[in-house]
Length: 299
Image (cartoon, rainbow, N blue to C red; front, side, top):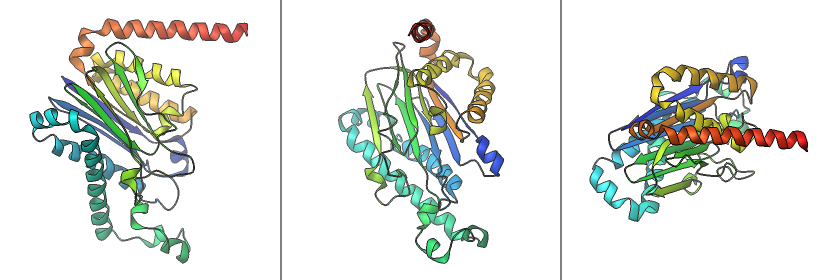
């Protein structure tokens, strides 16, 4: 049976400057499917409502996937053979729903003098309303027989598979091309998504996180090992969630000082029945780390 958790913590730099947390996160766990989603509102001054935009992005994703899954059997039968088209349709509908929410919020909440004061008249005239709310989006969906996900902008998607292997599902660099701000607020946002689809391979857990988590690690191996360790603790998720929040805050304070969001969905029954696989992988990771340290000392 699917379960999940999600947390967003305010970055140390935002605490120091009095800036709001621009991240948002959520999860949905149903009987036949689950969704993990995070969004990171852009930090530059023209995106001055990005905290609201990230919340809209998270909510729109949950609502859209839920709508597509309205008829579970039909969706599960049709999705595998048409997954590319369906994923694109989901992305487009998320963008459309997000723009509707943005337009509705702006209509009832016009720009305030304080928000406008940071710009010259010419600067402000060049900013689109959608840009006020600009944000990234990272989402993973677990279903019976397949998993899929997508992202626009930086952030990470990680899967811990039932054989113990842990992988990033979209390369970090690939998700945010150089010199391009990939954002749901862009006119061509639908063409800026990256996605993945995996069939006939069960996962213990899927994770979506904003870039503040990835950049707090020294290597990809350390980042992936972290997710394996968290997966080993999911049998007692209620007891360890406070420890996860504490760790995310610590990573922000001593890492990039950015906001950090982590959302997870997991197969509780599979974890309970195959915990030995996870623990074996954790031990292998420890031995690899010891060998790597020894090599550095000898070298």
